[in-house]
Image (cartoon, rainbow, N blue to C red; front, side, top):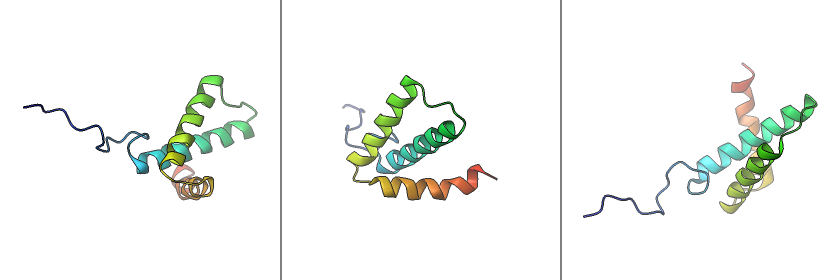
Length: 80
């Protein structure tokens, strides 16, 4: 009997887990904004990951506005 889990189970990755997708899309957005304010935009590789996180969140049905609102809930914890 196989112990391998079905591929449809949420495993905490942005591609399979909506909560993880929203979280990492918001974190990536916050990083991109902070880096732009500092005058050091994302590198090519970082921008590729940014796009992947945004795409995963959109795939799960989250809008840019929802990603931004979630980021706004994270900011107080980051600025403490």
